[in-house]
Amino acid sequence: MNQPSTTQHPEPDLTATQRDQEEESVHRALEGYYRAGKPPWDTGVTPSELVALVEGHSALPPGRALELGCGTGTNAIYLARHGWEVTAVDLIDRAVDQAREKAEAAGAAVRLLHGDATRLDELDAPGPFDLFFDLSCYCGVPLHRRDAYAAGLTHRAAPGARLLMFGYGPEPLGNPMPEVTSWAAGVTADELRARFAGWELLDVTPGTNSVPTFWFTLRRDA
Image (cartoon, rainbow, N blue to C red; front, side):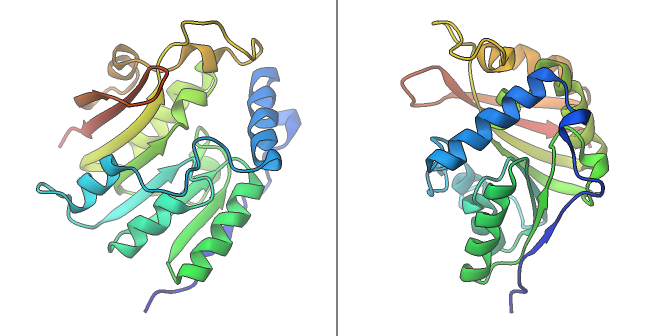
């Protein structure tokens, strides 16, 4: 029987004084999306790319999964229902609270952590993990925090672990929020190859969005 989901908060919690100006801008922007209603990345539908990895012809065997930027928990709950031991992290407490409510209603065992995906050492998420899932989290991380994100995952990756990441490409039309330069920079295959030492970029598949998006699949060296 599934156990109730749990939510943990980092001690001490990440405060504004610990974040720089751009990190604060990202935090405010994300909070704004959740205050206004459902964010565009939080569709309530598990992407077919994740379904293929979990249920497809070459599906991974269930193991331990870490979702970065879990939003309201749709995909963490999906993984838990398919036999994965799931830990899920989000920066926005409102999102984590909604994820907890959804997981409890679904009877899905998900460990929910309120915190920063680039500061995993401050959270109780030691790993090792066999699967990392990121739906638009990394591409919103400030550029100067991305090495810390990569290092956190690498430190917690089991040999042969997979990372499935969805991200926006570089913005060709200018940045609507100039204080958040990472959102204009997006993410590219070359960047991931450079930042994720000890990983192999297995696949890059363009998304179907009206703006440039990509699905990246990486594998940790054995």
